Image (cartoon, rainbow, N blue to C red; front, top):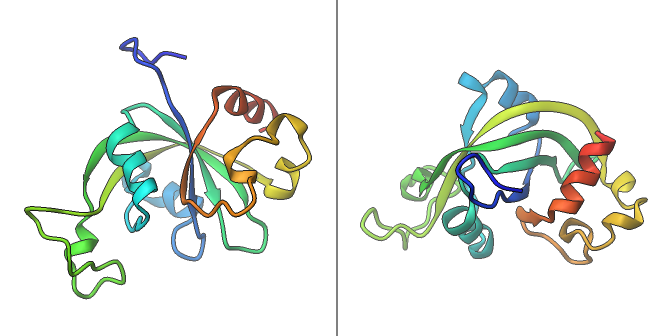
Length: 159
């Protein structure tokens, strides 16, 4: 699928612990937009910094909770820029090795497209067509993962 400028659109799954930031928090956020801060995994950072494009879509996924699952759809609203929490000594995301001249961590901004019914992880596991989805792979702990266009289309059909 191509975006409005003819570039390939990417699809993502972005995990958040609802106790930290939930889909309902995004609904209440100014302009339904927020920075996706606090990512401290290099591969997830690289996805944001190097591959995410404006208008890319992502599933907003609740993790580390009683019923993990897809809770909504968001779009990338602002391209990657340095995550300010890495410089804040009072933040749990502070990184003493990061400098403003050489930041280590980046975030994008996301905008709510829509809150959906919760699609639990257990339900996603029921579909053979999703067996290859990175989220469902044993040992997957990344907070951001790419979603194949066929997987995206299939999940959109069950939302």
